[in-house]
Each structure stands twice: as structure tokens, then as C-alpha cells.
Length: 165
Image (cartoon, rainbow, N blue to C red; front, side, top):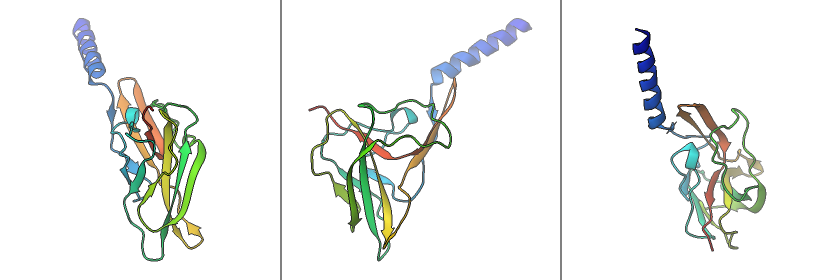
């Protein structure tokens, strides 16, 4: 009887390891969701390599009359994205050094003028401005479940990785 239970546990463990990591759907802090660059599908790869060093950032247009958008871009502190799934719940990640900011945009896109560094991770976000009042920067959160536990990305800005030269 003990051998059967042990065999069942080993079989379940092997299945769990082969199943890998499963990411749950993203939740967003606001409706200004990114259109491009697209985010990846999982906590392990939510920032994708794009094909230009001067991307056009696009997001869902939700502003009302009398409102505008602010957009900002931050260079990550590291040259590569943080791919860990061991984020601390309720503690946002560091966004890096702000390198670009535009305020009062009437449209739901922003083209980065000066080429960005190659092979570098960048964060970006958008918020709504109504006169002097501004909303919080738009972020997303995502949870992943794996055989070794649960990980999360909490209040993460949108992002992308620039291509090589």
C-alpha cells in the first residue's frame, strides 16, 4: 500500500514538472492598455524584443472631452528584463531612470524621437490628465503558478526590449 502511494506521488510530481509554469491572465490598473509594443503572454516573458529603437507607443484610447494623455519612458536599471517570477506581493518593481516624458497628448500614441540604446529593457506608461489633475500611471499585474510555487509581477509598467544594432 505504501509503495502505491509513493508511486502516485512520484507520478504526480513528474506531471507537475513537465507541465511547467502556468501564467494567469494579466490584470490592468486602468483601461489605457497597451496596443504596441505588445506585451508577452507570461510572467517569464512579458517584455518582447521589438524591431526598432524608435518605437511608436500605442494604447487604448479612453479619454473623454477635456482630457489628454501623459506618457513616460524609463530605462531599466539592467540591460536585460527582470524575468524572475518571485516578485514581492504588493511591492512594485523599480521602473528605472526616466528618459522621456510628454504631457498633454491628444492622441493615443507617442513616437520616441531619439533612438534608444540597443538590447536594453525599457518601461513605459500612460496616464490621463484633466487640467492639473492626473491619474496614476497605468500598470499591469500577473500571477504564475509552477511546480515550485506561486510568483507574481505586481504593478509593472508596460515595456519592451530594443533590438541589437
